[in-house]
Length: 515
Image 1 (cartoon, helix red, strand yellow):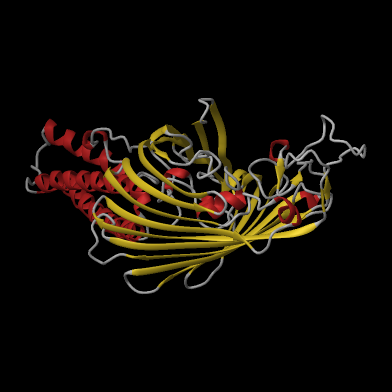
Image 2 (cartoon, rainbow, N blue to C red):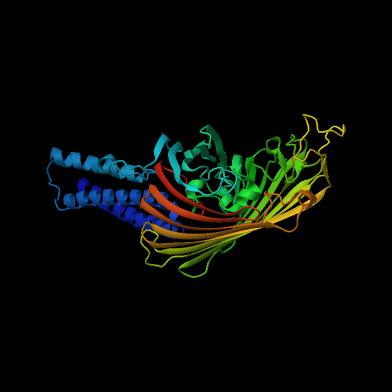
């Protein structure tokens, strides 16, 4: 009778688990429907784990059926039957253990490059992942780095560029926090290696009222592109408006962020952030720009003296299902903080963004799909009064700048400079693993500043537009190859043509990207 009871309970338990598994598969399918092609790595990892779990459950079910077909004898059971019952009891106990989502050892599939490289176990662990991105190509421009290419992770020279080798660690710290760190290794056009901490933060997981706090080094929640790491971009390089208003490294700094998931029938979230406002990762704020001129002024980064020296940001994002096959996400962002051009000058940046995606109900692995994304930004920059006669000696001595090289002492008044720009990109996943894209960029200003009126348009504010078609192939879930052409038109410089071939691979696990 014991054997029958074990079998009966085992089958009942297995059916319950299979129903749970169906629920997991359905939830995974829903999540997959809301991911873009850039998120294929995480999707494939989840699918693999589900397949392994399903296979294991089927094996246990078959063993139970075989045992049920053999009624236990009235006499003592054979040693073989006792061992089988003990093995089944152990396996059922493992399946019932809280938090167990891994298949047993005997059904474990061969290791894959997208499997998590895990340190630790249980409620405290870290998954390791590495993404390496490279580019090869050339341009007719003489000023590729910082000229046609504004981003620090953009291709920076003719020939080959190491756009970034990024090490990611993410996992559970304890029942109250999770952590994430992104460490990037880059090579500049001079061959010098640079290491930068892109992100390193902890985040709460158990606060009430749909609240969440993040603290540490982090990308500022402003728009869509600024919060993404380069390997998740749909194009080889950063959009012009992001590069011009946020600088080559994007907008990121140490600080804290509070987010609130608003209890509405649709996704709705509010973000409030406070961060340091100085350094190269806050280009439009208190960055000294290496001691050189920026917008006709010499800047001072300074130090935090009070709350007014901090950078404040806010963002609201909402997502709607337009239909069973279409999703729309819209957001608005703002950033406020002091800049280094004067004692009491500040910067205000505003932005709006829209993301739309269509994917049919019968899509396979996320294909086919069509997505459209647009961001527009406006910057009001209070530029302080400035004179090249820094010490009042009325001579350009060795310690004083000559910004335009005319040998004369120049002065500019306090004024507000307004710049704006936008980009719009369209992606078409026309076949599994293949995505065609087209992006248009435009940046300009509302009027020339006093410095520009006398000495000519500042390249940091000149009107410019760019058209970039590309084609991306994903041979598997952990690699991609992308070909892109850029047509650049810059006022005062002319037209330049660039062609870049990008290739990338992923090892281990990587944190999922936002929809």
